[in-house]
Figure 1 (cartoon, rainbow, N blue to C red):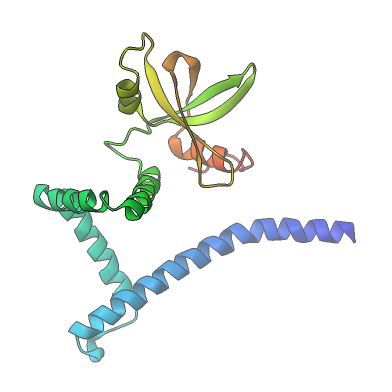
Figure 2 (cartoon, helix red, strand yellow):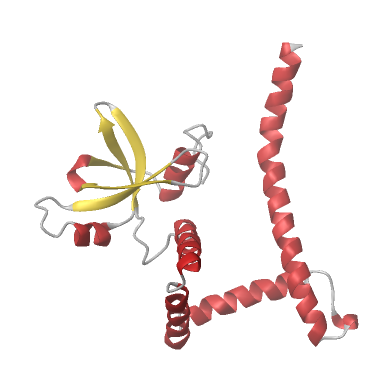
Length: 196
């Protein structure tokens, strides 16, 4: 009986990640179709509407917004709106947290999370982290004789972690991508091999 239970758990472990991923994609596409589809039906007759037009329109709208954000005038308007949100106490906290969360998943040019490092917390005890706040660390410790960096230490299986400000000489750089480092940190190192 124990052997059957073990096999069932192994089967669940094999199927669950794929099933949850497919369900999440399905859920997102369905929501996008429903929301954008309702708006499209207000503009065009039902005869011209087809299933998937909402998803296509939603995707094109996101691409257009992405292009517009790069334009100076639009960027200025977005910054003005964010400045307004940052003045409202509760909304400021929520907006800041969402913005920081999104930055964590859109690491690209202009973002500072550029390397994966090991931080020794005790002798021969290491945590994996991400260099994220070079400029902030420099502004917090302008008189430091050592170059300070900010290192984000994520917690396994949780959305959260700690930011340490530490001397750059106290960390050991790893030769892995930020994506692989995040996967190792978030799964407690229990993933199977590198997935490129």
